[in-house]
Image (cartoon, rainbow, N blue to C red; front, side, top):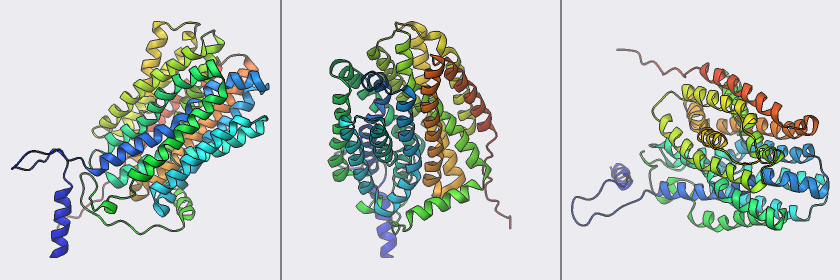
Length: 441
C-alpha cells in the first residue's frame, strides 16, 4: 500500500508544467527532464565547436605546411570515422558509468586534441590530434548521447526533443563558424584551434553540476511517463555493444537504415561541411563569405530538424526519409552551377533549402530504430550513426583526392546527388515492425 501511494505521489509530482494547483497563486513548474535537455543541448554545442574547423583550415594548412588536400582530408576522415565508431560504445559506457562521467571525459579529450594541434609540424600529428583524440571525444557526445538522454528522460515529446538536440550541432556551427572564420582570416588557424578547445572546457563544470544520469536519481518519473527505478549499471559495455550489433545485423531494416544514414553522412558532414568552403574559394569567394553561408545552413538546420521531429511524431518515418533524401539529391545536382565569386540569390536559395534538410533525417531514423529495436535502440542507433560517419569519412577523403586529381569538386557534387536518390529508394523498402497479435477469447 505504501509503495503504491509513493508511486502515485511521484507521478503526481511529475506532471507537465501546465498543471497548476486549483488554489493559491499559480506557479510554473518545469520538469527536470527539460533542464537535462538544455544541458545536453549546450554540451553538444561545446563539443561540436571543433566540427566548424576542418573546412576552414584546409587551405591554411595546405599553404603553411604544403600538405596535400588528400592528406588533410584523411585526417578529417579519421576524425569522422572514429566519431561514428565510438558512438555505440559510448552509449553502452553511459549505461555502465553514467552519462555525466562519460561526457566530462569526452569534453576533456576534445580540448586536449585541439590544444595539442597548435604545436604540430607533421601530417601524422594532424591525424593523431584531429583524427584520433578529437574523433574519440566528439564520438562520445554524438547523437547516441542524445538518444540515451531522450530515452531515459522522456516518454512524451520524444520526436520533438530528438529534433531539438539534433539541432544543437547546427547551433554550434552557427555560433562558431563565423567566429572561427574571422579568427583564421585575421589571426591564423592556431588561435581558432585554441578557441574551440576552450569552448569544450567551459562546458565541463556545467555538465558536472547540472547533468543527472536518470530521473530516479532525483526521485522523478520521465516526462510524460510513470516512475521507474534506475536499472543496475550494465557490466561488459563493449561485449553488449558488439552483441547488439550482431543481433541487429541479422535483420534487414538495420542494413537499410545503416545504408541510408551512410549516404546522409556522405552528403552532409563529408561533403558540404568539409569541402563547401574550399570549393567556393576555388571560384573566388572569400573564406569568410563561404563560412557565413555554412552558418546560415545552421540557422535553417535548426528549424528543419525541430520541424522534422514534430513531423516524426505524426507521420510515417519511412516516407519522411524518402522525401528528405530525394530533395537533397536534387539540390546537390544544381550546386556546381551556383558557385560564383559573390553570393547571389540562387545560392542563397540553395543554402536555405539545404539547411532545412541538413539533419532532418535524424528524428525519423531514430524513431525507426526505436520501433525496430526497443530497449537496445540507443546502441543500434549508435551503430547506424557509425555508418553515417564512415560515409562522411569516405567522402571527406575522396573529395580531397578528387579535387587534387580533377582540379574541381564538380564530380563529387554529382555523385552525391545520385547517392541521395538511392537512399530515398532504400528508405521506402524498410518494413514496419509487425504489432503483436492478441488472440481473441
